Image (cartoon, rainbow, N blue to C red; front, side, top):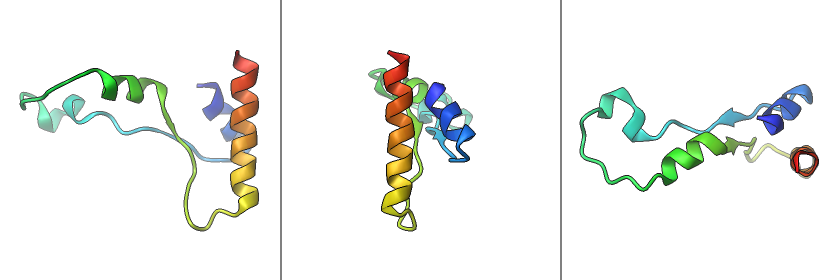
Length: 74
């Protein structure tokens, strides 16, 4: 994931999103009503930094790196 790598180079932590519940062993065999949306999000999404301690400058930096990386990837 290019965005995650670029954020990491800038010492900004990001994380993959949580694994969908239907893929977790504890829920194996449980009834589920799947549409594929959770799997799509799991494979394509990224959790970006957030929190009340982030300054406007912190947010701007994360946004700038994310935008730059995404625009270069096109």
